[in-house]
Image (cartoon, rainbow, N blue to C red; front, side):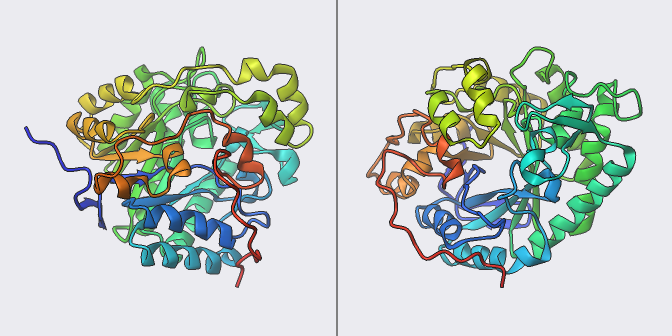
Length: 400
């Protein structure tokens, strides 16, 4: 059977995309005042001009406490004008634009935010070196409302799609992961109970926005840590999401931002460079135990394809493949495997126009070396260190 052309127009729920390639959410580090800047707009316009069907803005928190640090945007009225400027600019460049919205949970830096982090269960934070408190039912009801309010702001800002963050041990993911959720109430124990809160959030967002925009989610297939989320639970959870009928697509990811981030990224492990850029006291912890936290995994094309196939076999809903896409033949391979969309990140950070050149027959393979030296730059503006640094622009946070 002939598979879809990755560069042909396609639909994502109510949104028409010019092709099936999505720029995956990768934190940009370009919002020092928790507001949109010209640098952030330029970042997404570059990949839009470079040919993606849709670019994803990361990471928009639904609450001040839900940020991984205080510089991240949280969805509020004062952020709306800047976000509208960003979406208008991306649309003018020919691409759709998605807002990744979420709550970082235990991955939030309570010390930086000046607010305590919360998760499914009480635990020490390796990021802020503080205790993360267990969310009460009142907290959970509040967070559901914040997701709804944040989703409505994103729609007003002109985003075409919303990506709900259900991965990487962020708040919703922490409820799914057995090693993080030790609750004894109706939100803990069985998979049905652990899935209750994430499903409530997904349903509430869909009910709030209706068919006005596409609603998708990013889900970890496995955490990559002992006792964490595995396929035996993540596939049945995805089937519950499919049965709920609230999502237009599911993007498949992996790894834990709390305990094993390199399980997603693969390739080089720049521990010293990361420690040098991190704020105190996180930099101290990374210097001491960074080699255990940042484990080494070799890079390979389509390195998450094996577990993603299991999801494809178990689900009929549209799926987005993510992980190790650097070549045109990999784009075609993903389509042949039955995935509806494919997400790229580091390859486009190195070469924002890679897709356009692939379409023109001018390139077949990206030049990203997977050194991951881009990871430490999230504190000063995410970029490929192998490229000349852009000349500084006059920056104004776009609050009005």
